[in-house]
Every structure is written in structure tokens, then in C-alpha cells.
Image 1 (cartoon, rainbow, N blue to C red):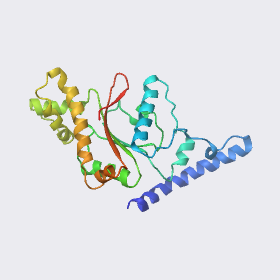
Image 2: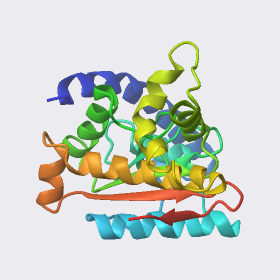
Image 3: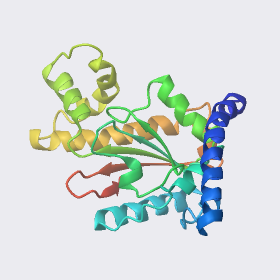
Amino acid sequence: MFNPSRRAFLAKGAVATGGILAGAALAGCSSGATTLAATTTTTFPHVTNGADALARLVAGNGRFVSGRPTNQGRTSARLVEVADHQDPFAIILGCSDSRVSPEIVFDQGVGDLFVIRVAGNTAIDPVLLGSIEYSVAELGSVLLMVLGHENCGAVKGALSEALKGTAYPGDIGSFLSPVVPAAQSVATLPVTSQLDGAIKQNVLNQVQALSSSAAIIQPAVAAGKLTIVGAEYTLTTGKVTILT
């Protein structure tokens, strides 16, 4: 249902990349260089199910943590390859935090991930939920990961609002509201455990809400076409821990 407008939009990019490709081919004729179209962009295995998709993300995070990322799929050849189509194998619903960039954290390339980032990694807003639904229905993504992270400022804010009555200016409260239930759930925990407990609970709450989203996501899960998982990123080590 989105394809006509999407293809019209991407056609403009295809014209530009076509010029790049043509220029590279002419350069290759004069110097013997390999053209962009002939360059191998990635050796990552193609995945068609949630288990393999998750394994690919875990392996990529392992490379990132060890300091040996491959950075595959980030070449000019890859830009040409995906200029007129995309089929991201995974959707990452992550936080807007500047320290948590999914393509880097999971060592993936251009076109591999459909990334949705909002402070607090929630998808209550219809615009965010619709973005996820689009990637499932139109792009064929087989994995949806809700990615929370250590020391999350949005969760800190929700804790302060829920447990101390703190009021925030402007529209900050709009992204805190979906996190408040997780903050309220840890009220009886020791203060030193509340932040980490609320971060994890918020991820689990989002996984549960998405799993029961009836329009597109729940049927895809029921049909075995989509797997949903929750995870937490540790800022100090770079490691992603699967929570579900």
C-alpha cells in the first residue's frame, strides 16, 4: 500500500546513484579498476527467520564488543545496491540516546536494520507503531527487538515523575508517560535497584504491548513470520543482553 509513493521517492536517489556508478565505470575503463557494481558488499548470511536474525545481531554485537567489527555493507557499492529497494531483516526499537547506535552496536550495514529511535524506547504513539508495522508488512522484517540501555535518562525522568512528583517543562512528559508504569512497578525496590529494575521492566512492557498489537504485528507473530525480543545495552562494555 506504500509502494507507489515509496518507489517514486527512491527513483530520485536511483538517478543520482546511477550517475555515480557510470562515473566509476568510466574510471575503471581507463585504469583497470573494479567498478562499484562488481564489488562484493557483504558476506553476511541472508536470514529468513527470527532465530537466525537474532543470531546475526548477537554475532555482530560480539564483534563490536571485542573491538573487531567488520563494517561490512558500508561501502559506496552497498549504497548503489540498495538505492531502489530495501529489505531490512530486523527492526530495532531503541532509545534516542546518542551512545546507542544500533548499526554500530550490532556491526550491520546500510539497509540491514529498520531503526526506530525515541527516548525511552516505547511504541505507544501511533506514528511509532505504524513505522514498525510498515517494516513488518511492507519490508518483510522477521525480527523486532526492543532495545533498552543502562543508565537511561528517560527512565530516570519517569522514576522522578512517578515517585517524586517531578514536573517537566514543554513536551518532555509526552515521552515519559509510556515509561511511568515501569517506574511505578519498582517503587518497593531499594533505591539503588530502582533504575535498573525499571529499565528492564520498561523493555518487557513494550515487548508485551507490541506482541498483542492486533492490526499487523500479532498476526505476523502467530504465523511465525515475526519474532519479538527485548534486550538491554550496557554502556560501559557495549554488550547487549537478551532479556526475553
